Image (cartoon, rainbow, N blue to C red; front, side, top):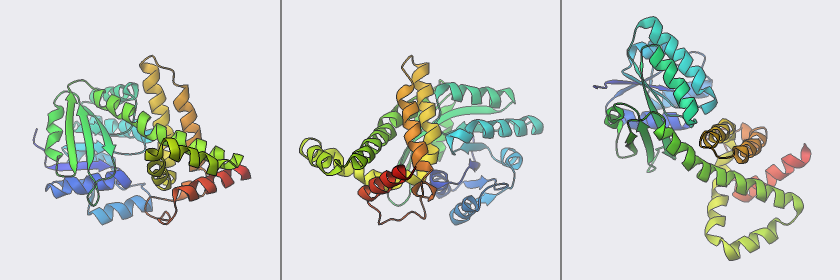
Length: 294
C-alpha cells in the first residue's frame, strides 16, 4: 500500500508528537478540527498539521487515518469514521492506536470493515516522542506491515501478527503493569499521608525498595493531567482481563483512584500548563488534602 497523506485524530499530547514524527518522514499529516477544543487547535497549529475540517473530509482525503485519543472516545470516533466511509464509498485504512481491550478492538473493526473500509489494530507504548524520547507503535492485522512506512528514529513500528487485537493485547498487558503500578503506589502513598505515617513508610521503602521510590515519585507529577484518560484505560484493562478469564476488579478499583485524581485541581491541568516545579511528594500532599476536603 502506498501512503502519501496521513490523517490523525486527535492532536493531543501523544497525537501531536506522533504526527510530528510522521511529518519528519515527509508525509502530509492532516487532522479535523471541527468541534475540537482550542487546545487541540493550538497543538495542531504548533505541529503544522493541515486542518481539513470534518472527519468526512479526513476519511476522503487521507490514505490512512490514525486514531490516537482518549480511549473512551474511540468507539464514537469509529462510528463517525465508518459513516463517512460508507457515505463516500471510500476504502480508507483506519488504524486504531488507542488503549482499548481486544473486545473493543473487534467492535471497531466490525464498524470500519462493515462500512467498506480497512482496519488495523495498534497500541502505543512509551512517552510522546518529543526531544530525544522514542515511542513504540505495535500493529496487528492483515497487511499490518504497511504501517512500517511511518517508522522513523523516534517512532518504532513493530508488526505483531496478522491477527486483529494482538497489538492491543500487548498494550493492555503492558499498561496494566506500568500505569497500574503507578496508580497503586499513588493510592497507597496518599493513604499513608492521610494516616500520618508517610515519612515512616518512605524510610522503610528506601531500605527495601530504594530502586523504586525515586522512580515512582518522579512519575507522580505527570499523572494528574492525564488521569481523566487513564480512567477509561483502566476500564479497558479490566475488560481485557475479563476476556482472558482473569478477575477484572483490581482495575475497576484503579479506575476509581484515577477518577478521583481527575476531579481535583491537579487533574484540571494539562500536560502543557502543569507546574513543572511540583514534586512527587507535593502531588501526594495535595491529593491527600483534596481527599480530606471531600
